[in-house]
Image 1: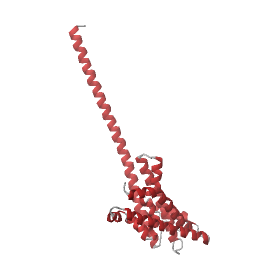
Image 2: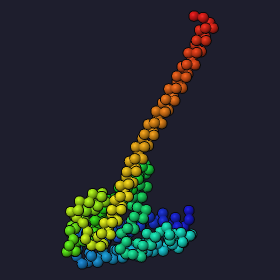
Image 3: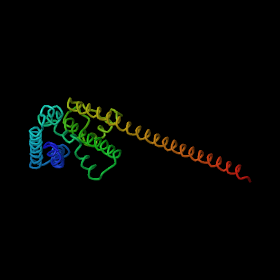
Image 4: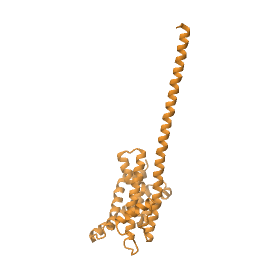
Length: 241
């Protein structure tokens, strides 16, 4: 195991905690507009501290990487998280740390683990997307997403591609969030559909294999009975009735 892999394994849970802390520091002021000034300042410093720790982690991993150009190419989202503060909430999407830790702790089967990843990703994107769109739409005079309930309803209809049209973003930032949720929703639906289709195909193949094995066993039994009848007929013919 190289030093980079060892570092990533040792810090995965710590990054999960830091990322969760950042999300709380970012989401609480949005969900509680009347937050007192000291609490608002704590949330702000929590975001700054989380960003600093993410930056330090990225630089350490870059130093430990045996092939730095390859590391840069494979970790462009992590670089964007560090360089562009607006993308910092997307850091938890890196390897889906929360779901990874949960799946590793409870040792889920592979198929169930995939369901956990997909479900967790959908919930995570819906929550983050609804908070993000509420943050940019609430203060727009033409906006119609004014509460977290409106935002969650909008995120749900957007990700499931229903799109009732009763709630919709009017700002540029809100529409960027909407575009991301649309693409994510389509991708997640595709994964779910593929998983269900794979399950049916696997069930059919298992049933077909069982039927073929049963037919082969029956054919073998018939062949053995035929040989036994021939042997009995030969004995009867040889020794008489």
